[in-house]
Length: 140
Image 1: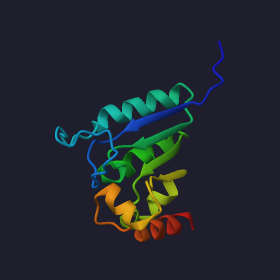
Image 2: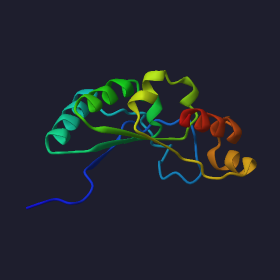
Image 3: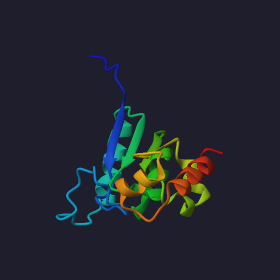
């Protein structure tokens, strides 16, 4: 039997997030601020790679809040996997250069390009302009 589809693994690293988006399906009243176990995650990534996996997509919550993000991205890369990150973009200015060398793709969730609407939807202190500037810098 041959598998011809994508060989991607999607991992929710944490249910923690620094935004409170009105459209998010996350029930913040029951949020437990839990992270996936790094030991369990490492084993999953190793098994995925051994099965011919191609890319690990890290999401959350906000994956840039996950304390061992660089550690798991290093492991993925060492196993020949690509790293994809989906983020709200607010923490990009605080990432070390190594983050950008480990990330093969970066997806930034922007619910609106109208500044007032962005603020209303995300309930965050981050401005749309600052997110756009971070995205442009990350793409450079």
